[in-house]
Image 1: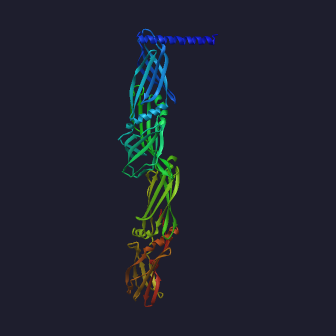
Image 2: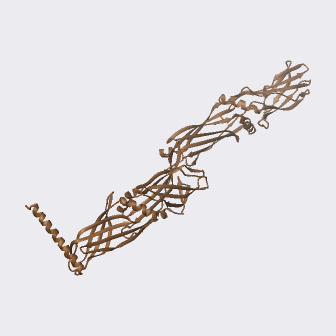
Length: 601
Protein backbone atom coordinates (compact mmCIF):
# COMPACT_ATOMS: atom_id res chain seq x y z
CA UNK A 1 0.00 0.00 0.00
CA UNK A 2 1.33 3.43 -1.01
CA UNK A 3 1.35 5.94 1.78
CA UNK A 4 -0.05 9.46 1.45
CA UNK A 5 3.34 10.87 2.27
CA UNK A 6 4.86 9.03 -0.66
CA UNK A 7 2.09 10.31 -3.08
CA UNK A 8 2.78 13.87 -1.94
CA UNK A 9 6.47 13.37 -2.56
CA UNK A 10 5.75 12.04 -6.12
CA UNK A 11 3.41 14.97 -6.99
CA UNK A 12 5.83 17.47 -5.65
CA UNK A 13 8.54 15.86 -7.65
CA UNK A 14 6.44 15.96 -10.86
CA UNK A 15 5.62 19.62 -10.40
CA UNK A 16 9.26 20.36 -9.83
CA UNK A 17 10.15 18.51 -13.01
CA UNK A 18 7.53 20.47 -15.08
CA UNK A 19 8.74 23.69 -13.57
CA UNK A 20 12.28 22.83 -14.44
CA UNK A 21 11.24 21.86 -17.99
CA UNK A 22 9.37 25.14 -18.32
CA UNK A 23 12.40 27.13 -17.17
CA UNK A 24 14.62 25.28 -19.62
CA UNK A 25 12.06 25.69 -22.45
CA UNK A 26 11.75 29.41 -21.74
CA UNK A 27 15.53 29.72 -21.86
CA UNK A 28 15.75 27.79 -25.13
CA UNK A 29 13.04 29.93 -26.74
CA UNK A 30 14.63 33.08 -25.43
CA UNK A 31 18.06 32.14 -26.86
CA UNK A 32 16.51 31.08 -30.22
CA UNK A 33 17.49 27.45 -29.81
CA UNK A 34 13.77 26.44 -30.00
CA UNK A 35 11.01 28.17 -32.00
CA UNK A 36 7.57 28.90 -30.47
CA UNK A 37 4.68 26.78 -31.81
CA UNK A 38 2.24 28.57 -34.18
CA UNK A 39 -1.49 28.06 -34.77
CA UNK A 40 -2.24 27.76 -38.46
CA UNK A 41 -6.05 27.76 -38.46
CA UNK A 42 -9.05 27.51 -36.18
CA UNK A 43 -12.28 25.82 -37.24
CA UNK A 44 -15.43 25.68 -35.13
CA UNK A 45 -18.71 23.81 -35.28
CA UNK A 46 -21.73 23.34 -33.03
CA UNK A 47 -21.68 20.43 -30.66
CA UNK A 48 -24.28 19.11 -28.22
CA UNK A 49 -27.34 21.33 -27.83
CA UNK A 50 -29.49 21.46 -24.71
CA UNK A 51 -32.24 23.82 -23.67
CA UNK A 52 -29.70 25.84 -21.66
CA UNK A 53 -26.47 25.67 -23.62
CA UNK A 54 -24.82 24.92 -26.95
CA UNK A 55 -21.39 23.35 -27.18
CA UNK A 56 -18.83 24.83 -29.55
CA UNK A 57 -16.26 22.32 -30.78
CA UNK A 58 -13.09 23.98 -32.05
CA UNK A 59 -10.21 22.34 -33.90
CA UNK A 60 -6.93 24.27 -34.02
CA UNK A 61 -4.08 23.31 -36.36
CA UNK A 62 -0.75 23.75 -34.49
CA UNK A 63 2.63 23.82 -36.21
CA UNK A 64 5.65 22.94 -34.03
CA UNK A 65 8.72 23.75 -36.16
CA UNK A 66 11.14 22.19 -33.67
CA UNK A 67 12.74 18.79 -34.21
CA UNK A 68 11.56 17.76 -30.78
CA UNK A 69 8.15 17.84 -29.17
CA UNK A 70 7.03 20.58 -26.84
CA UNK A 71 6.11 19.25 -23.40
CA UNK A 72 2.74 19.88 -21.76
CA UNK A 73 3.42 23.36 -20.52
CA UNK A 74 1.56 25.31 -23.25
CA UNK A 75 -1.85 27.07 -22.82
CA UNK A 76 -4.39 27.78 -25.59
CA UNK A 77 -7.11 30.46 -25.00
CA UNK A 78 -10.18 30.85 -27.24
CA UNK A 79 -13.02 33.41 -27.56
CA UNK A 80 -15.97 33.83 -29.98
CA UNK A 81 -17.93 37.07 -30.25
CA UNK A 82 -20.95 38.19 -32.28
CA UNK A 83 -21.31 41.98 -32.35
CA UNK A 84 -19.20 42.22 -29.21
CA UNK A 85 -21.49 39.75 -27.47
CA UNK A 86 -19.21 37.02 -26.11
CA UNK A 87 -20.81 33.75 -27.10
CA UNK A 88 -18.12 31.49 -25.71
CA UNK A 89 -14.76 31.72 -23.96
CA UNK A 90 -12.47 28.82 -23.11
CA UNK A 91 -8.91 27.91 -22.23
CA UNK A 92 -6.92 24.69 -22.22
CA UNK A 93 -3.67 24.44 -20.21
CA UNK A 94 -0.91 21.85 -19.98
CA UNK A 95 -0.91 21.20 -23.71
CA UNK A 96 2.05 19.58 -25.41
CA UNK A 97 2.80 19.25 -29.11
CA UNK A 98 4.80 16.71 -31.07
CA UNK A 99 7.22 17.87 -33.72
CA UNK A 100 5.52 18.98 -36.94
CA UNK A 101 1.83 19.73 -37.49
CA UNK A 102 -0.85 18.47 -35.11
CA UNK A 103 -4.52 19.16 -34.36
CA UNK A 104 -5.78 20.37 -31.04
CA UNK A 105 -9.47 19.95 -30.13
CA UNK A 106 -11.09 22.44 -27.78
CA UNK A 107 -14.63 22.38 -26.41
CA UNK A 108 -16.55 25.07 -24.60
CA UNK A 109 -20.19 25.72 -23.84
CA UNK A 110 -22.19 28.76 -24.83
CA UNK A 111 -25.05 29.88 -22.62
CA UNK A 112 -28.13 30.07 -24.92
CA UNK A 113 -29.25 33.20 -23.11
CA UNK A 114 -26.36 34.98 -24.83
CA UNK A 115 -28.26 34.51 -28.13
CA UNK A 116 -30.97 36.83 -26.82
CA UNK A 117 -28.32 39.51 -26.32
CA UNK A 118 -26.93 38.87 -29.77
CA UNK A 119 -30.42 39.04 -31.32
CA UNK A 120 -31.06 42.50 -29.87
CA UNK A 121 -27.74 43.76 -31.24
CA UNK A 122 -28.34 42.04 -34.57
CA UNK A 123 -31.74 43.71 -35.06
CA UNK A 124 -30.57 47.13 -33.94
CA UNK A 125 -27.62 46.90 -36.36
CA UNK A 126 -29.89 46.35 -39.35
CA UNK A 127 -29.84 42.54 -39.17
CA UNK A 128 -26.04 42.55 -39.51
CA UNK A 129 -23.58 40.86 -37.16
CA UNK A 130 -19.82 40.26 -37.20
CA UNK A 131 -18.45 36.98 -35.93
CA UNK A 132 -14.92 37.33 -34.50
CA UNK A 133 -12.95 34.31 -33.32
CA UNK A 134 -9.64 34.86 -31.50
CA UNK A 135 -7.11 32.37 -30.10
CA UNK A 136 -3.84 32.72 -28.18
CA UNK A 137 -1.07 30.14 -27.67
CA UNK A 138 1.29 30.87 -24.79
CA UNK A 139 3.98 29.08 -22.92
CA UNK A 140 7.18 29.70 -20.99
CA UNK A 141 8.93 32.55 -22.69
CA UNK A 142 6.42 33.11 -25.53
CA UNK A 143 2.83 34.15 -26.38
CA UNK A 144 1.40 34.05 -29.89
CA UNK A 145 -2.03 35.47 -30.85
CA UNK A 146 -3.68 33.86 -33.83
CA UNK A 147 -4.93 36.38 -36.40
CA UNK A 148 -8.64 36.91 -35.67
CA UNK A 149 -11.08 35.12 -37.93
CA UNK A 150 -13.89 37.43 -39.01
CA UNK A 151 -17.11 36.78 -40.89
CA UNK A 152 -20.31 38.73 -41.39
CA UNK A 153 -23.76 37.32 -40.68
CA UNK A 154 -26.47 39.18 -42.60
CA UNK A 155 -30.13 38.27 -42.62
CA UNK A 156 -33.04 39.95 -44.36
CA UNK A 157 -36.15 38.93 -42.52
CA UNK A 158 -37.84 42.26 -43.23
CA UNK A 159 -37.17 41.83 -46.92
CA UNK A 160 -38.87 38.46 -46.73
CA UNK A 161 -41.94 40.06 -45.20
CA UNK A 162 -42.13 42.82 -47.77
CA UNK A 163 -43.86 42.02 -51.03
CA UNK A 164 -45.87 43.94 -53.57
CA UNK A 165 -47.48 40.75 -54.81
CA UNK A 166 -51.17 40.64 -54.02
CA UNK A 167 -52.68 37.66 -52.24
CA UNK A 168 -56.37 36.85 -52.47
CA UNK A 169 -58.04 35.75 -49.27
CA UNK A 170 -60.90 33.44 -50.18
CA UNK A 171 -63.95 32.64 -48.17
CA UNK A 172 -65.67 29.41 -49.15
CA UNK A 173 -63.88 29.61 -52.50
CA UNK A 174 -65.11 33.13 -53.28
CA UNK A 175 -62.70 36.09 -53.45
CA UNK A 176 -63.09 38.11 -50.29
CA UNK A 177 -60.08 40.34 -49.65
CA UNK A 178 -57.00 41.14 -51.71
CA UNK A 179 -53.97 41.79 -49.49
CA UNK A 180 -50.98 43.55 -51.05
CA UNK A 181 -48.14 46.03 -50.55
CA UNK A 182 -46.91 44.19 -47.48
CA UNK A 183 -44.10 45.85 -45.54
CA UNK A 184 -42.41 45.28 -42.19
CA UNK A 185 -40.11 47.24 -39.89
CA UNK A 186 -38.20 46.60 -36.68
CA UNK A 187 -38.39 48.97 -33.76
CA UNK A 188 -35.65 49.57 -31.18
CA UNK A 189 -35.06 46.19 -29.59
CA UNK A 190 -34.02 45.63 -25.98
CA UNK A 191 -33.59 42.67 -23.70
CA UNK A 192 -37.33 42.43 -23.16
CA UNK A 193 -39.06 43.33 -26.42
CA UNK A 194 -38.26 43.38 -30.09
CA UNK A 195 -40.92 45.57 -31.78
CA UNK A 196 -42.15 44.46 -35.20
CA UNK A 197 -44.61 46.44 -37.31
CA UNK A 198 -46.31 44.99 -40.38
CA UNK A 199 -48.48 46.89 -42.81
CA UNK A 200 -50.54 45.91 -45.82
CA UNK A 201 -53.28 47.26 -48.03
CA UNK A 202 -56.59 45.45 -47.89
CA UNK A 203 -58.97 45.69 -50.85
CA UNK A 204 -62.57 44.63 -50.29
CA UNK A 205 -63.75 42.59 -53.29
CA UNK A 206 -66.78 41.31 -51.38
CA UNK A 207 -70.35 42.51 -51.88
CA UNK A 208 -70.69 43.92 -48.38
CA UNK A 209 -68.53 46.03 -46.05
CA UNK A 210 -65.74 44.30 -44.16
CA UNK A 211 -65.14 45.51 -40.61
CA UNK A 212 -62.56 44.21 -38.17
CA UNK A 213 -62.54 45.62 -34.65
CA UNK A 214 -59.01 44.36 -34.02
CA UNK A 215 -56.51 41.60 -34.77
CA UNK A 216 -54.85 38.74 -32.94
CA UNK A 217 -51.25 38.11 -33.95
CA UNK A 218 -48.99 35.09 -33.60
CA UNK A 219 -45.28 35.02 -34.48
CA UNK A 220 -43.48 31.66 -34.36
CA UNK A 221 -40.05 30.35 -35.25
CA UNK A 222 -39.74 26.57 -35.36
CA UNK A 223 -42.95 26.38 -33.31
CA UNK A 224 -41.45 28.58 -30.58
CA UNK A 225 -43.96 31.36 -29.94
CA UNK A 226 -42.08 34.65 -30.00
CA UNK A 227 -45.14 36.89 -29.90
CA UNK A 228 -48.82 36.37 -29.28
CA UNK A 229 -51.08 39.28 -28.57
CA UNK A 230 -54.03 41.44 -29.51
CA UNK A 231 -54.44 44.85 -31.10
CA UNK A 232 -57.78 46.56 -30.58
CA UNK A 233 -57.84 48.46 -33.85
CA UNK A 234 -58.55 47.10 -37.29
CA UNK A 235 -60.12 48.16 -40.58
CA UNK A 236 -63.45 49.20 -42.02
CA UNK A 237 -63.53 48.86 -45.80
CA UNK A 238 -66.54 49.37 -48.06
CA UNK A 239 -67.06 47.15 -51.14
CA UNK A 240 -64.60 48.09 -53.86
CA UNK A 241 -62.57 50.26 -51.49
CA UNK A 242 -59.05 49.77 -50.11
CA UNK A 243 -57.84 50.33 -46.56
CA UNK A 244 -54.56 49.94 -44.69
CA UNK A 245 -54.00 47.45 -41.92
CA UNK A 246 -51.18 48.40 -39.54
CA UNK A 247 -50.27 46.02 -36.72
CA UNK A 248 -47.58 46.57 -34.11
CA UNK A 249 -46.28 43.50 -32.33
CA UNK A 250 -43.80 42.86 -29.56
CA UNK A 251 -41.51 39.83 -29.83
CA UNK A 252 -40.22 38.38 -26.58
CA UNK A 253 -36.46 38.86 -26.95
CA UNK A 254 -35.68 36.30 -24.24
CA UNK A 255 -37.54 33.62 -26.24
CA UNK A 256 -34.77 33.75 -28.84
CA UNK A 257 -32.75 31.49 -26.54
CA UNK A 258 -35.44 28.81 -26.88
CA UNK A 259 -35.56 29.30 -30.62
CA UNK A 260 -31.76 28.98 -30.92
CA UNK A 261 -31.72 25.41 -29.63
CA UNK A 262 -34.26 24.37 -32.30
CA UNK A 263 -32.35 26.27 -34.97
CA UNK A 264 -29.06 24.50 -34.32
CA UNK A 265 -30.69 21.08 -33.99
CA UNK A 266 -32.28 21.61 -37.42
CA UNK A 267 -28.92 22.35 -39.04
CA UNK A 268 -29.31 26.12 -38.63
CA UNK A 269 -32.64 26.10 -40.44
CA UNK A 270 -35.78 27.79 -39.19
CA UNK A 271 -39.29 28.61 -40.34
CA UNK A 272 -40.59 32.00 -39.25
CA UNK A 273 -44.32 32.59 -39.56
CA UNK A 274 -46.51 35.60 -38.87
CA UNK A 275 -50.30 35.24 -38.86
CA UNK A 276 -52.92 37.91 -38.18
CA UNK A 277 -56.46 36.86 -37.31
CA UNK A 278 -59.35 39.31 -37.54
CA UNK A 279 -61.42 40.13 -34.45
CA UNK A 280 -64.96 41.34 -33.89
CA UNK A 281 -66.32 42.78 -30.70
CA UNK A 282 -69.24 40.91 -29.20
CA UNK A 283 -70.88 41.70 -25.86
CA UNK A 284 -67.88 43.65 -24.64
CA UNK A 285 -65.38 40.96 -25.64
CA UNK A 286 -63.46 40.04 -28.77
CA UNK A 287 -63.87 36.91 -30.87
CA UNK A 288 -61.75 35.65 -33.75
CA UNK A 289 -63.21 35.53 -37.21
CA UNK A 290 -62.43 32.53 -39.40
CA UNK A 291 -60.00 34.28 -41.74
CA UNK A 292 -56.33 35.21 -41.69
CA UNK A 293 -56.00 38.75 -42.97
CA UNK A 294 -52.22 38.55 -43.06
CA UNK A 295 -50.03 35.48 -43.36
CA UNK A 296 -46.34 35.23 -44.14
CA UNK A 297 -43.88 32.35 -43.82
CA UNK A 298 -40.10 32.60 -44.23
CA UNK A 299 -37.35 29.99 -44.40
CA UNK A 300 -34.16 31.14 -42.61
CA UNK A 301 -30.88 29.31 -43.10
CA UNK A 302 -27.58 30.37 -41.51
CA UNK A 303 -23.99 29.19 -41.22
CA UNK A 304 -22.80 31.28 -38.30
CA UNK A 305 -19.55 29.43 -37.53
CA UNK A 306 -18.78 28.43 -41.07
CA UNK A 307 -18.41 31.81 -42.74
CA UNK A 308 -21.59 33.64 -41.81
CA UNK A 309 -23.62 32.89 -44.94
CA UNK A 310 -27.39 33.34 -44.49
CA UNK A 311 -30.45 33.17 -46.71
CA UNK A 312 -34.11 34.07 -46.30
CA UNK A 313 -36.71 32.55 -48.59
CA UNK A 314 -40.39 33.46 -48.57
CA UNK A 315 -42.82 30.58 -48.76
CA UNK A 316 -46.24 30.97 -50.29
CA UNK A 317 -48.89 30.59 -47.61
CA UNK A 318 -51.04 27.50 -47.98
CA UNK A 319 -54.35 27.80 -49.75
CA UNK A 320 -56.86 28.09 -46.95
CA UNK A 321 -60.56 27.78 -47.53
CA UNK A 322 -62.44 28.95 -44.48
CA UNK A 323 -64.69 26.27 -43.12
CA UNK A 324 -67.95 28.14 -43.40
CA UNK A 325 -71.06 27.02 -45.21
CA UNK A 326 -74.04 29.23 -45.70
CA UNK A 327 -77.11 28.07 -43.75
CA UNK A 328 -79.97 26.77 -45.86
CA UNK A 329 -83.66 27.55 -45.54
CA UNK A 330 -85.37 24.18 -45.29
CA UNK A 331 -88.95 25.41 -45.36
CA UNK A 332 -91.32 28.20 -44.48
CA UNK A 333 -95.01 28.37 -43.65
CA UNK A 334 -97.15 31.49 -43.42
CA UNK A 335 -100.24 32.18 -41.40
CA UNK A 336 -102.17 35.14 -40.07
CA UNK A 337 -101.45 36.40 -36.61
CA UNK A 338 -103.07 39.14 -34.57
CA UNK A 339 -105.53 41.40 -36.39
CA UNK A 340 -106.31 44.96 -35.42
CA UNK A 341 -108.22 47.69 -37.18
CA UNK A 342 -104.91 48.95 -38.60
CA UNK A 343 -102.69 45.93 -39.15
CA UNK A 344 -102.74 42.21 -39.79
CA UNK A 345 -99.77 40.13 -38.71
CA UNK A 346 -98.18 37.71 -41.14
CA UNK A 347 -96.36 35.06 -39.14
CA UNK A 348 -93.78 33.09 -41.07
CA UNK A 349 -92.27 30.02 -39.44
CA UNK A 350 -88.86 29.33 -40.96
CA UNK A 351 -86.93 26.07 -40.63
CA UNK A 352 -83.20 26.44 -41.19
CA UNK A 353 -80.32 23.98 -41.51
CA UNK A 354 -76.97 25.20 -40.22
CA UNK A 355 -74.05 22.88 -41.08
CA UNK A 356 -71.37 24.91 -39.26
CA UNK A 357 -69.65 24.05 -36.01
CA UNK A 358 -69.56 25.99 -32.78
CA UNK A 359 -66.45 27.94 -33.76
CA UNK A 360 -68.45 29.63 -36.50
CA UNK A 361 -71.79 29.58 -34.73
CA UNK A 362 -70.51 31.73 -31.86
CA UNK A 363 -70.14 34.51 -34.42
CA UNK A 364 -73.02 33.66 -36.71
CA UNK A 365 -76.28 35.58 -36.77
CA UNK A 366 -79.03 35.65 -39.37
CA UNK A 367 -80.61 38.86 -40.51
CA UNK A 368 -83.89 38.25 -42.29
CA UNK A 369 -86.12 40.75 -44.01
CA UNK A 370 -89.37 39.88 -45.71
CA UNK A 371 -91.47 41.91 -48.11
CA UNK A 372 -94.97 40.86 -49.12
CA UNK A 373 -96.89 42.24 -52.05
CA UNK A 374 -100.41 41.55 -53.28
CA UNK A 375 -100.89 42.34 -56.93
CA UNK A 376 -97.71 44.36 -56.84
CA UNK A 377 -98.84 46.51 -53.92
CA UNK A 378 -96.38 46.36 -51.01
CA UNK A 379 -98.51 45.44 -48.03
CA UNK A 380 -96.07 44.19 -45.39
CA UNK A 381 -92.43 44.22 -44.39
CA UNK A 382 -90.73 42.56 -41.46
CA UNK A 383 -87.24 42.16 -40.01
CA UNK A 384 -85.77 39.53 -37.74
CA UNK A 385 -82.33 38.83 -36.30
CA UNK A 386 -81.31 35.49 -34.87
CA UNK A 387 -78.09 35.55 -32.83
CA UNK A 388 -75.99 32.54 -31.91
CA UNK A 389 -77.47 30.16 -34.46
CA UNK A 390 -77.31 26.53 -33.30
CA UNK A 391 -75.87 23.75 -35.41
CA UNK A 392 -78.29 21.50 -37.23
CA UNK A 393 -82.01 22.15 -37.72
CA UNK A 394 -83.59 25.07 -35.90
CA UNK A 395 -86.56 27.35 -36.41
CA UNK A 396 -87.52 30.93 -35.88
CA UNK A 397 -90.61 33.02 -36.50
CA UNK A 398 -90.64 36.16 -38.58
CA UNK A 399 -93.51 38.56 -37.95
CA UNK A 400 -94.39 41.28 -40.39
CA UNK A 401 -97.30 43.67 -40.05
CA UNK A 402 -99.58 44.08 -43.03
CA UNK A 403 -100.97 47.58 -43.34
CA UNK A 404 -104.74 47.21 -43.70
CA UNK A 405 -104.95 50.59 -45.42
CA UNK A 406 -103.37 48.92 -48.46
CA UNK A 407 -106.37 46.63 -48.96
CA UNK A 408 -108.45 49.00 -51.15
CA UNK A 409 -105.54 49.39 -53.58
CA UNK A 410 -104.76 45.71 -54.04
CA UNK A 411 -108.45 44.81 -53.97
CA UNK A 412 -109.12 47.19 -56.87
CA UNK A 413 -106.43 45.33 -58.83
CA UNK A 414 -108.00 42.07 -57.73
CA UNK A 415 -111.33 43.08 -59.29
CA UNK A 416 -109.75 44.51 -62.42
CA UNK A 417 -107.83 41.25 -62.85
CA UNK A 418 -110.97 39.14 -63.00
CA UNK A 419 -111.07 38.60 -59.23
CA UNK A 420 -107.63 37.02 -59.28
CA UNK A 421 -104.70 37.99 -57.06
CA UNK A 422 -101.06 37.03 -56.71
CA UNK A 423 -99.38 37.12 -53.32
CA UNK A 424 -95.58 37.31 -53.47
CA UNK A 425 -93.30 37.10 -50.44
CA UNK A 426 -89.71 38.07 -51.13
CA UNK A 427 -87.37 37.20 -48.27
CA UNK A 428 -83.76 38.30 -48.01
CA UNK A 429 -81.52 36.38 -45.61
CA UNK A 430 -77.99 37.39 -44.73
CA UNK A 431 -75.52 35.52 -42.58
CA UNK A 432 -73.79 38.00 -40.30
CA UNK A 433 -70.35 36.86 -39.13
CA UNK A 434 -69.55 40.05 -37.32
CA UNK A 435 -66.89 41.20 -39.76
CA UNK A 436 -69.10 41.03 -42.85
CA UNK A 437 -72.29 39.50 -44.20
CA UNK A 438 -73.06 36.88 -46.82
CA UNK A 439 -76.26 36.31 -48.74
CA UNK A 440 -78.13 33.10 -48.01
CA UNK A 441 -80.05 31.69 -50.93
CA UNK A 442 -83.75 31.53 -50.20
CA UNK A 443 -86.53 31.18 -52.78
CA UNK A 444 -89.36 33.62 -53.15
CA UNK A 445 -92.80 32.32 -52.25
CA UNK A 446 -95.73 33.02 -54.53
CA UNK A 447 -99.35 32.03 -54.15
CA UNK A 448 -102.56 32.97 -55.90
CA UNK A 449 -106.19 33.15 -54.92
CA UNK A 450 -109.41 33.96 -56.71
CA UNK A 451 -112.98 34.92 -55.79
CA UNK A 452 -116.34 35.03 -57.56
CA UNK A 453 -118.39 37.65 -55.78
CA UNK A 454 -120.90 38.05 -58.61
CA UNK A 455 -121.70 34.37 -58.90
CA UNK A 456 -125.47 33.88 -59.17
CA UNK A 457 -126.21 37.45 -60.16
CA UNK A 458 -128.08 37.40 -63.46
CA UNK A 459 -129.21 34.77 -65.91
CA UNK A 460 -132.69 34.34 -64.40
CA UNK A 461 -136.14 35.77 -65.14
CA UNK A 462 -138.78 36.74 -62.63
CA UNK A 463 -142.24 38.30 -62.75
CA UNK A 464 -142.99 41.39 -60.74
CA UNK A 465 -146.61 41.72 -59.58
CA UNK A 466 -148.45 44.86 -58.48
CA UNK A 467 -151.72 44.52 -56.62
CA UNK A 468 -151.63 40.82 -57.23
CA UNK A 469 -151.42 41.17 -60.99
CA UNK A 470 -148.28 40.59 -63.11
CA UNK A 471 -146.76 43.91 -64.12
CA UNK A 472 -143.26 43.24 -65.53
CA UNK A 473 -141.06 40.33 -66.49
CA UNK A 474 -137.48 41.10 -65.41
CA UNK A 475 -134.78 39.06 -67.14
CA UNK A 476 -131.29 39.80 -65.87
CA UNK A 477 -128.03 39.27 -67.64
CA UNK A 478 -124.72 38.32 -65.97
CA UNK A 479 -123.41 41.14 -63.80
CA UNK A 480 -119.83 42.38 -64.38
CA UNK A 481 -117.33 44.59 -62.69
CA UNK A 482 -116.55 47.98 -64.08
CA UNK A 483 -113.14 49.57 -63.63
CA UNK A 484 -112.35 49.62 -59.95
CA UNK A 485 -110.23 52.17 -58.13
CA UNK A 486 -109.11 52.31 -54.49
CA UNK A 487 -112.13 54.54 -53.93
CA UNK A 488 -114.94 52.84 -55.88
CA UNK A 489 -115.85 49.52 -57.41
CA UNK A 490 -118.80 49.55 -59.82
CA UNK A 491 -120.95 46.53 -60.60
CA UNK A 492 -122.47 46.77 -64.08
CA UNK A 493 -126.02 45.39 -64.16
CA UNK A 494 -127.98 44.80 -67.38
CA UNK A 495 -131.53 43.51 -67.62
CA UNK A 496 -134.63 43.57 -69.85
CA UNK A 497 -138.02 44.79 -68.69
CA UNK A 498 -141.00 43.28 -70.55
CA UNK A 499 -144.51 44.86 -70.16
CA UNK A 500 -147.17 42.34 -71.13
CA UNK A 501 -150.01 44.55 -69.90
CA UNK A 502 -152.12 46.96 -71.90
CA UNK A 503 -151.19 49.88 -69.74
CA UNK A 504 -147.80 51.55 -69.15
CA UNK A 505 -145.60 50.40 -66.24
CA UNK A 506 -143.20 52.77 -64.52
CA UNK A 507 -140.13 51.83 -62.48
CA UNK A 508 -139.76 54.84 -60.26
CA UNK A 509 -136.82 53.67 -58.13
CA UNK A 510 -134.15 50.99 -58.06
CA UNK A 511 -132.38 50.64 -54.69
CA UNK A 512 -129.39 48.41 -53.91
CA UNK A 513 -127.49 47.41 -50.81
CA UNK A 514 -124.20 45.51 -50.80
CA UNK A 515 -122.62 44.23 -47.59
CA UNK A 516 -119.66 41.98 -46.88
CA UNK A 517 -119.72 40.59 -43.34
CA UNK A 518 -122.01 43.42 -42.25
CA UNK A 519 -119.64 46.00 -43.67
CA UNK A 520 -121.99 47.97 -45.92
CA UNK A 521 -120.23 48.97 -49.13
CA UNK A 522 -123.29 50.44 -50.82
CA UNK A 523 -126.81 51.52 -49.86
CA UNK A 524 -128.00 53.70 -52.69
CA UNK A 525 -130.67 54.46 -55.28
CA UNK A 526 -130.10 54.30 -59.01
CA UNK A 527 -130.70 57.81 -60.38
CA UNK A 528 -132.59 56.64 -63.50
CA UNK A 529 -136.37 56.04 -63.85
CA UNK A 530 -137.76 53.64 -66.45
CA UNK A 531 -141.14 53.72 -68.34
CA UNK A 532 -142.17 50.63 -70.23
CA UNK A 533 -145.01 51.05 -72.75
CA UNK A 534 -147.69 48.37 -73.19
CA UNK A 535 -146.30 45.30 -74.98
CA UNK A 536 -142.76 46.82 -74.96
CA UNK A 537 -139.53 45.04 -73.92
CA UNK A 538 -136.87 47.49 -72.83
CA UNK A 539 -133.17 46.99 -72.04
CA UNK A 540 -131.87 48.85 -69.04
CA UNK A 541 -128.45 49.14 -67.43
CA UNK A 542 -127.19 50.74 -64.28
CA UNK A 543 -124.22 50.74 -61.94
CA UNK A 544 -124.14 49.69 -58.35
CA UNK A 545 -121.27 51.79 -56.99
CA UNK A 546 -119.45 50.18 -54.05
CA UNK A 547 -117.37 52.15 -51.57
CA UNK A 548 -114.06 50.41 -52.12
CA UNK A 549 -112.45 52.58 -49.47
CA UNK A 550 -114.16 50.47 -46.80
CA UNK A 551 -112.52 47.24 -47.91
CA UNK A 552 -109.94 47.58 -45.09
CA UNK A 553 -112.84 47.28 -42.65
CA UNK A 554 -114.12 44.23 -44.49
CA UNK A 555 -110.62 42.68 -44.47
CA UNK A 556 -110.44 42.68 -40.69
CA UNK A 557 -113.71 40.76 -40.43
CA UNK A 558 -112.70 38.41 -43.23
CA UNK A 559 -109.44 37.33 -41.55
CA UNK A 560 -110.99 37.09 -38.11
CA UNK A 561 -113.57 34.69 -39.53
CA UNK A 562 -110.90 32.44 -41.00
CA UNK A 563 -111.00 34.11 -44.42
CA UNK A 564 -114.73 33.61 -44.76
CA UNK A 565 -117.23 36.31 -45.81
CA UNK A 566 -120.99 36.45 -46.03
CA UNK A 567 -121.91 38.22 -49.29
CA UNK A 568 -125.20 40.08 -49.37
CA UNK A 569 -126.42 41.91 -52.51
CA UNK A 570 -130.03 43.17 -52.34
CA UNK A 571 -131.78 45.01 -55.21
CA UNK A 572 -135.34 46.39 -54.89
CA UNK A 573 -137.51 48.11 -57.47
CA UNK A 574 -140.51 50.39 -56.95
CA UNK A 575 -143.05 49.62 -59.73
CA UNK A 576 -146.17 51.71 -60.49
CA UNK A 577 -149.24 50.66 -62.49
CA UNK A 578 -152.82 51.99 -62.63
CA UNK A 579 -153.54 49.53 -59.86
CA UNK A 580 -151.01 51.12 -57.52
CA UNK A 581 -147.35 51.12 -56.49
CA UNK A 582 -145.33 48.37 -54.93
CA UNK A 583 -141.63 47.90 -53.91
CA UNK A 584 -140.38 44.40 -54.53
CA UNK A 585 -137.02 42.61 -54.18
CA UNK A 586 -135.46 41.49 -57.44
CA UNK A 587 -133.92 38.13 -56.57
CA UNK A 588 -132.44 37.75 -60.07
CA UNK A 589 -130.21 40.77 -59.47
CA UNK A 590 -129.19 39.95 -55.92
CA UNK A 591 -127.02 37.41 -54.13
CA UNK A 592 -126.70 35.83 -50.71
CA UNK A 593 -123.81 33.46 -50.22
CA UNK A 594 -120.37 32.80 -48.76
CA UNK A 595 -116.97 33.66 -50.12
CA UNK A 596 -113.80 31.98 -48.80
CA UNK A 597 -110.15 32.57 -49.62
CA UNK A 598 -106.71 31.20 -48.79
CA UNK A 599 -104.66 34.29 -49.42
CA UNK A 600 -101.37 32.93 -48.05
CA UNK A 601 -101.93 29.76 -50.02
